[in-house]
Length: 213
Ligand code: T5A
Ligand code: NA
Image 1 (cartoon, rainbow, N blue to C red):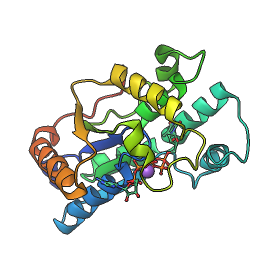
Image 2: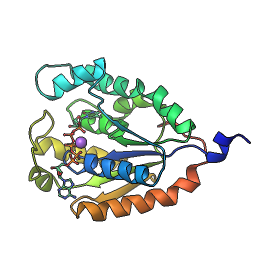
Image 3: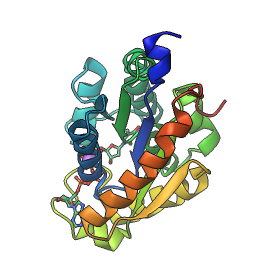
């Protein structure tokens, strides 16, 4: 048995939820925990605003440009697919990957728009690496709105966020952990950390699955 296969693969973790629930905060805390404990870890955020595709998305989110709704949905998906070779390679080599938003955001935010259904929205992301676990940071819209800089970007409107939350409910599966995001951030981190530690050994020697196949 090679050294690599003895080490096993990395774990794929996704953070999801409506805007301002604390995903980026928890993502960073989990990445830091992995680093301080000597685990190999990589951090991805979607949209990745640094790529060519990501730059169009960034401009759209900031309201600096307009894009047709189907077209922007496909761009968000393409922005994940362009990261897949890197993510897959890292996981196979034993590095854990922590993602701030993923395909569930893609579906929830587009399906919340008029004239879109979940089945259509899922299709472009079908076959992406499937997270071993999804932490859904649950927060009521009124509480999210009271957090710093809510309302600066395109989708940060109360009524729209309520619709997004409804779609997320539909997407929820057994691999999800719903986290009460209104608590102290350290308390939330402890809960997330202990769930991940328990999961690590179970997934190490299992195949990474494909999403929605
Ligand atoms: N989108 C995204 C799509 O439409 N389709 C897609 O496919 C994808 C991937 C950008 C937008 O794009 C949409 C969804 C979004 O509308 P983004 O870049 O993730 O997505 O948006 P951001 O604005 O960066 O992130 P969020 O608004 O979602 O915020 P977070 O990451 O949930 O929250 P965070 O950690 O930045 O915290 C927000 C504030 O709350 C405080 C923080 O200090 C910060 O000030 N905070 C807490 N306060 C009290 N208690 C706690 N426990 C706290 N945790 C954090
Ligand atoms: Na964020």
